[in-house]
Length: 116
Image (cartoon, rainbow, N blue to C red; front, side):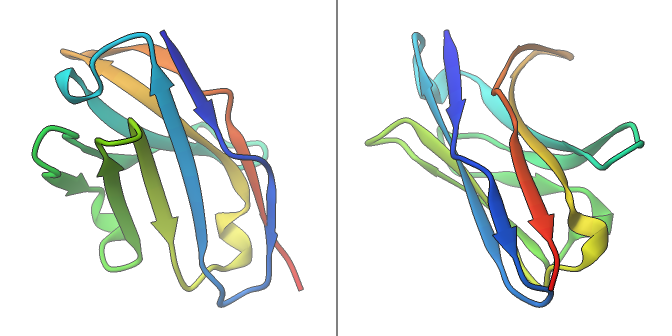
């Protein structure tokens, strides 16, 4: 099982960023994909999840209206798009495979830096 994320990204405040997570080694539609992030010096922060089977999403309230999860079953790739970026969004973003109540596989992380 592998979750391979897109590379680091530098964005200006107010812009949007889209991070991809290509999975392999299992049936993409069989497990939820969660997105979490970790800002410098902070703990992990849950952003939400998507069910790749039907595209159903659940977003953390903090990100409602600014974040969008999508899943492309033809390429087994999940995406997170975050808009109206601000400096506080600087973090490493991870996709993780949810297995019941825990996470069993993680992407390698994508550094997103928001700076002018």
